[in-house]
Image (cartoon, rainbow, N blue to C red; front, side):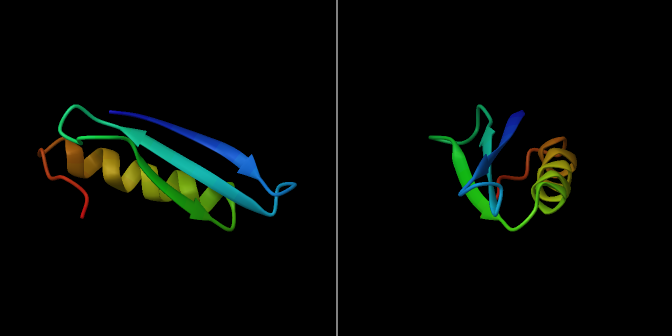
Amino acid sequence: MSFHIRPRSNNRAHELRIKHPLLPRPFYATFDSAAEARAFAEKASHRSAGNTVLS
């Protein structure tokens, strides 16, 4: 699983993109901070180790 976090709206928001072979297309989410986005990505990474798909 790979993920990428990029700043949006002059660093007021951060977009997270997650790519995984079990997902039909990349998953996108927006967070207020890069730390929140990274925490979500790490949590998703741990879940993907057990092949649990995000819902």
